[in-house]
Length: 132
Image (cartoon, rainbow, N blue to C red):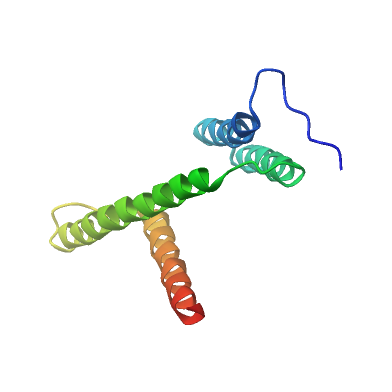
């Protein structure tokens, strides 16, 4: 299989990360502008391009050091969201129940997503423990 094309002077890692970054910026920009479907399609196209780029490379894109850094970044991200969610959502719910604030409508889908996200995480922890 021929090596994938990379722009001169641009590393394969930067190309890969750049595809994800452009897709994310496009997604956020189109969402803010009110183009929800276009945002999802645009992100999906750049995500598909990044995945295709990664899987068509003959040489590894990331080495062991990169994997360790990405794993640590992922663990730190989960920790920050976990601690933040453990503080924000119960506090907001308690203040809402006490009549101090009104639960904002936009917070409900975020709360449901975060709850679902951590249910998936718990399932992955259980699966990892079972496999050891």
